[in-house]
Image (cartoon, rainbow, N blue to C red; front, side, top):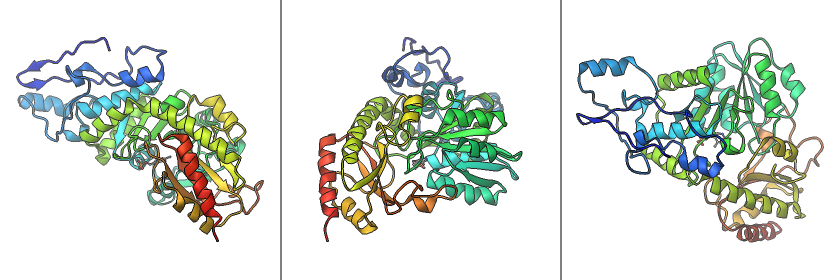
Length: 423
Ligand SMILES: *Cc1c(COP(=O)(O)O)cnc(C)c1O
């Protein structure tokens, strides 16, 4: 960053103006360079590398005229009261906006689920229909059939891979569609550019949960989506020690996201924002490493007799690989596999025998995780197992590959498979 710090230090108060967004940022830089430089506005960082942690609820004004002025203006990067954040959170917003081509701004939420709720509440009203792809993250599905239904929104689930059925499901009341690619657990890669274009043609707002790829692997707005959401808990946090979410959008929709988040009182702590910014700097290194390891492990699993299907779009020949290769520039360490004709007990023996993989929810941390999953319970528009599969091949394991050495993880899985054969 070539710009020098320019703190205005008049009567003890630092003057802060607008967030800087993507203005004036150099194009064509690699991901590592972009991550190092994003959101490092000298106005927020001062003379040090990282923005200080501004723990603040009350922002003091010089006099009543300044108070009145601060209350009247509601712009990014302006002090008002802690609920609108302070420079630590604004620096993270700026960084995420700079990483998301096409975004006018980014809103932070206390979790990824809060980001999904915030985005849906920003665009939906009673009487609207929301389309949700059938491979959606379970809390998204539950929000659509629970909370949103209570507020008069009807959710319809659609086959994530059937473009014609998607268009046929759009009716005059359809207001928005929730996309997620690759889908949670079963990892279907959707034709997002086609789905987003159809949505736009019908005046339907497309929202993508882009937690898996991040904008480094899939710039969702550039690919045609209107709003893109991430659980920052996963790759951006990256160390399993914070919860946060984000939503980014173009101008008018960004305004709606922001307005709704303020109305709902969504706010994140400056300590968590500083942690997220710190982790963001290494995100491409972590993603590259876990992607490489995941591919090596997926290839190894493909050769195992105990495995019926490897659901990993990174893997040549696996479902969704061609679409992933066409639309994505990166991946991550999260994928699944389906056991060949085993039962739930055998799967538990496998997972319980793992020593390097933790058993727990979430993903995207530096440590590897394994969980059992049964996607059949979360489906309403598409059958699971798919009709083309052997019906006995239905018990899934989801792996989040971390930063360990892949050969050690493979040895751990070998031990797990051996334990699976116990009587
Ligand atoms: C984890 C997850 C979320 C929710 O994020 P939290 O920060 O845990 O609330 C949303 N979408 C996907 C795809 C996820 O995996």
